[in-house]
Image 1 (cartoon, rainbow, N blue to C red):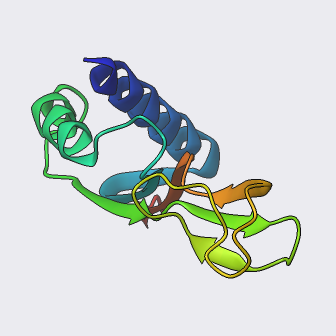
Image 2 (spheres, rainbow, N blue to C red):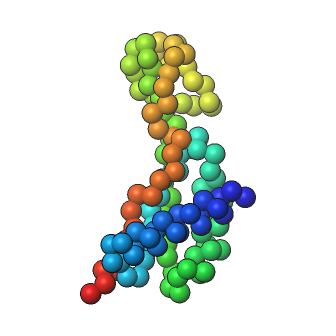
Length: 116
């Protein structure tokens, strides 16, 4: 399951940011996962729940926002949500589209205590 390695990388990124910024106890991590990213949000949550105890002694909540797959039509410039993986503009029927969101996985925010 590649989600475990992604979660390990995410946790290491959070720990490094916490070290750099002088943060104390981490309470919440918020990420975005695109629905066309190849990453399953349920598996990420499950892997995080299993692995978080290796890094933190208190509970840390993982918040996952799933980003819909969206595209822009090169012909008419309409922005639309891609449904059923049909990469065709619903406005003009054009097939020359550019994906604008939905392929990403990124760290959005970390809620933590500041060290005094």
